[in-house]
Structure formats: structure tokens, C-alpha cells
Length: 310
Image (cartoon, rainbow, N blue to C red; front, side, top):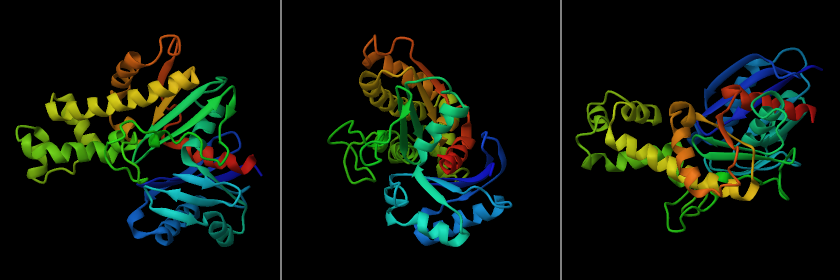
């Protein structure tokens, strides 16, 4: 069978597509996750997206899910941004569709897709950093996608950046995710708006004209809003710090950035690079390239579908 279903489950959206073995997305759809409603309702929406793209008898269904995955059992062991613990996602989806189902971490799926069809083709040492509701990662070392002893490798968002830092969704303090994910960038701005009454964001929120998100902060920064610029520079500093640690440890040739925050604020890459260059070892960052994901929002769908042919 030359087609499979790929599902990209995220903290804010669920995307699914019908994908060929050569990585071509034939059909795709997207809905909101609405994670606060709980696993049962989210799984119903996963099925809704599958129903919209499924045709004939696909090879199977691959799902990229955030957090820590027991790949053998097909269980989402712990996904902080979904607030899921030990959800038997594989068994539930297999029972509904009578098709083989495979599950892995969402950014690991994206990394595999970029390695086969995207920006990391023919590159043996790669780090992927995706910044959205959370911060996820993938690592290719010496041509191999790293999974780790318990399929938990590359939890980049949960490296400790500051031990007395903000509380993270994982329960620890000072994780990279608690400084630089989308919700925390917005939280940083929101907490400071009462003292920044001259900010265009203060006026916008007060007048109820716009929902405050990273896109709004990006637009304000482009117009020179000092609070918006400060917020993005702060996030980029911490991302640069985290990436510098990875560069010193792994010595990659390429770092791929993606996710909703990077898409909304692409100038973050230049700011991250500035921070990285101050902290990474000169030889470790020699010839290092920082680029945006080539596959964009299709990467998760393609990577999840690839699980069906592993």
C-alpha cells in the first residue's frame, strides 16, 4: 500500500493528511485541539480529522504526539501541555479503524521527515527545535535518529535553564519551555502591560480589538514597540542559551527551527543566532547553519505517516 494517514497532534491544533510513501500530501485537514476538554474529546477530534482524509485502505495510521511516548505500547505516557497521563492512544484508534497504528513523539516525527524529504537530506548531524505551545526537539547523530533508552531523547524544552525560574507544565522550575514557548512569551507581556501603558499592545488589549498572541507581539515589535521587542529578545536569548548547550554537546551541522512561534516571529532566528554565537564554542559552531523548517506545517503529517513504513 502506497498511502498512509499521518496525524500531527499538538497542544493547540490537530492536523491530519493522506500521504504517499514518497512524502506527498494528497489531502489534509486541521482542527483545534481544545485540550482542556480532556482526552476523550481530543481523541474524538483526532478521529474527525482521520475521517476527513481517509481513502480506500491505507497502510496504517501514524500519530505524532507531544510529550513522552511508550512507542511499544502506543501510549502517551506524559504530555504536559495536553495534561495527559498514560493514554492508550494506539489501542483506541486501532479499535475504531481496524488498521495498524503507530505512535511516536511529534517532533521526532518532524525530524525524520526533514531528514528524508526536507532540509536535512544527506546531513548526518542535525538538531530540530520546534517552538509552539511547548518546545520540542529531535536529534540526528551520525545519521541516526536518537530515541534514547526509554524513547525520551531530545526533550529540549525541559532542559533546566535557570533552577529558580518559572514553573513549567512538567512540574519542574526554570525549563527552557517556561521562558520561550508561545504561551510564556504572551504571559511575560501580559504581566507587564499594566506598567507599559504607552505600549501599543496595552492599547490594543484594553480596547478589546485583538487577542494577544505571538503574532500580535511580532507585529508590535516590527513597529518598534519596546515591550514587544524586549519580550522577543528575552525569548531568543534563552533559546540561544539552550541551543548553545546542544551545539557544545552534539556539534551538529544544521539546526532546524519550526513551530508556530517561529512561523509567527521569523526574526527570532537572527536573535537566537546572536545569542548562540556568544555562548557556543567557536569550533562547535564553525560552519553551523540555522534554518527554518523546509516542510513547514506538513512536516508533522509526513513524519507521522512514515511510522507506518518503518
